[in-house]
Length: 222
Image 1: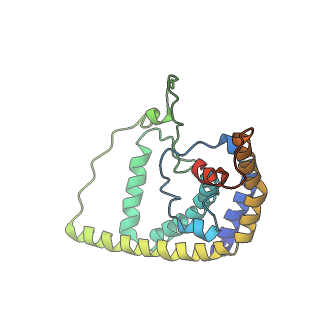
Image 2: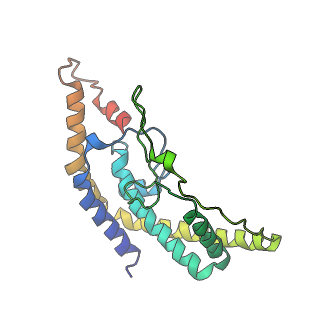
Image 3: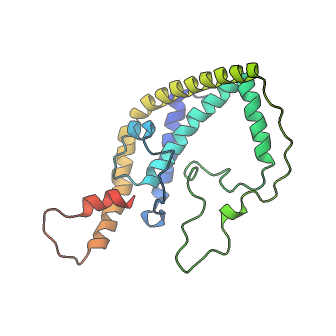
């Protein structure tokens, strides 16, 4: 199995193959802060600036985050039996929770709203969010944990968090080496789309040569 360097390289390769398919016109406006991307050290390590559209950042951040998640899952399964058992129980409960529209999505779409915002006067016939939980089965109540088990579980959670921090640091350090590839792809494939969009929005408008609002607008669009 590849080490951290190979996994990061593979994630960047997948993102580079996906990026040519992204079109700025198909991107949904943000309706709320993305918890996965806001303040992410992965975005800093990748060299993303404030003008890079959120969907472009989210697609790479999602793939890199999966590397950390997989490493923590592997460490937990091998070294943290109590936490692993609780996670297995949670997964079993999830399997009886019915249809979950946000499950099984590719990294480009994980953590995003599954439904677009409704347009005034044009309600949806149904939304995926409304279908969540369809077909759910009754769940058996779980046995309460003893105080000793709770303390042991908290200790294992702390170890899991430490694994996540260490892996995240290693991943970000490795990602820094791929900044040139990432920057070149953004400049070649994303910047022209942003420039064309801003140009279309201000075509035909007369204004002063300096103080053109395009730069500020770019940051507000994404």
